[in-house]
Length: 277
Image (tube, rainbow, N blue to C red; front, side):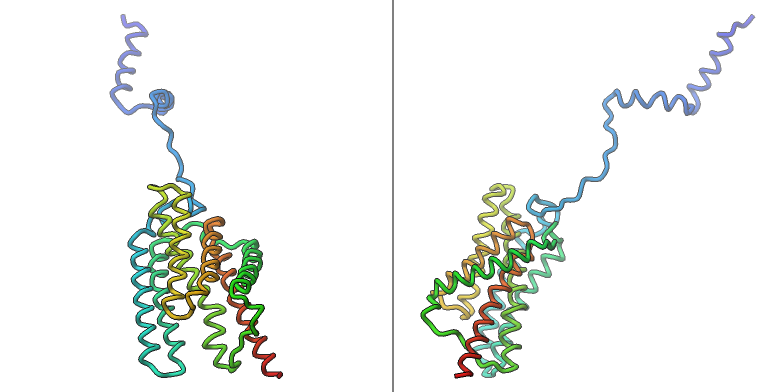
């Protein structure tokens, strides 16, 4: 005579040999957790500040820095040849255009590799930085160059002046220079030194290298007497520091535009005053 136990036994054997039931799976789940199996985690949060590192910042490495320096050097050399060999009123503008190409190439190479997090973000405070620091730097320039003891600068205010001087110096030049010196060069140096030297040391080195190359290009291409490099150095130092402190580029771009635009306004005022005499 079979007991109830004899009937249950084969059924349990069949369940253990076949597919487990949903109830068994549910009951087994807690045991997996008890054995130390980690629950699945979601995706890592996306970085919002390039100064903390990230894939894009690591991509802006030594090779990007080399491309920037080589392209810049080649552009300066070629632009100097254009000025030297081409006797034309358009030679200065052509030389400047060559220099712009030398700036655009490394910027394009760098951004093709990646876009550092937060670098292109704009905040209303950037307008304040641009106006306040740009005007302050122009005052410092006037003090360093003893501008108060000299007449206002002037120029021949022809329509071509807007094309050859005002637009390049007041808009295009500042944007390209900031994107080369305060994004590509600054971030590349920072990226190279952030891990081995630490963030503070990397930031200081990036500011100094960016400023030094910024001064060098203005001295080498003949657009700046060596004695006036202090003012340009102050612009480079302030703009580089602003990018490091905010993590954004547009404040530095606006500082540079305001600084150059104030000189253009002084030139226009000088031309107006000299024309009225």
